[in-house]
Image (cartoon, rainbow, N blue to C red):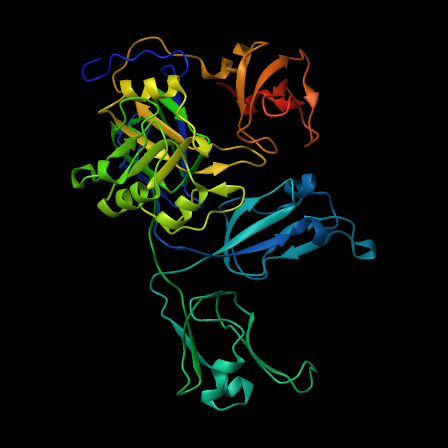
Length: 452
């Protein structure tokens, strides 16, 4: 255990950590089973940038229930298809027998949903394919300088093959002329001198890295790998920003000390900072400016995040913001101090290399932001994370981590022995929680509460 901290926490024990790392569609796997990897190790890559997705409502086209879609498919996820290929056959077609559905484009079958009945086919852009320019002025029968005013799309916008990108005339089909995209891609130029519009197919490598230090325990052919390690996971309430990593540095002496601008210095570039209190607008702005990789604090203002980081927060899900720094709020918004157990855990991990992810989803299938600290070479006892639900007890103080009571505190007043049906109509183990704010008793899936 050389190099490992003298760590002990009942709230955040050392456990087996499993991370499934996958490409969004089939590519090239670069590692082998049993291989030791670092957070920056490339596990898999796509040599062609994923193109524009075509979402096909196969259930509606075939007239069948979504759960029956897999039985009708003649292709599998990862298969290449061409325009006109029959990809599914089924349903009732009357006197003509079963219905068939043909692929609307060349591409790769990316996903199949048994919940929605939809199939996604993503076009594959080749890096050798040049931009395509075509004479929109001729198609519309107008002068080149009139092309911009007749465009229905803007430069930088994605278009699909066959989509109308420009139109001239009234709504009457007899008088209206339209120009359709000859390929799928991104509109890169509208030339008012010659009347041509250019559509490009950009190339970019998509790479999946290890995210955490560990070992490859399973290779996922064409998609990636499963990485296992042992260490500590500390989840927050709300986060934003991409996957990141760095050496953890605790900036506060106690959970009540805020993160302020004067605490941020140039030598903190690349670090992951932890503060027990509130992060000010100026501190977040300075941290981003000097190149801090992550900030973990108790709380921040919603407007602070938007103004200081220059991001627009998504509704229900975050993690895709275009910034280099990851921010995780352990207690949510407002002005609260960090839970003492969490702060003490961070203090023990001070100086350790950590990975963090700001992705948060507070609706169906709750996802919480995380800080992961691997313990390479650890040979001590491991906590069984799968038994977390069994540790809940009546009277425990808990925090709810899913909508519609996201972030609220309360007390467990009942733990029904049998699974119960919730709003999604699923039957799951639940807890009855009395909310601290108004004493209402609500029914919450056990996996959506944490002991506070």
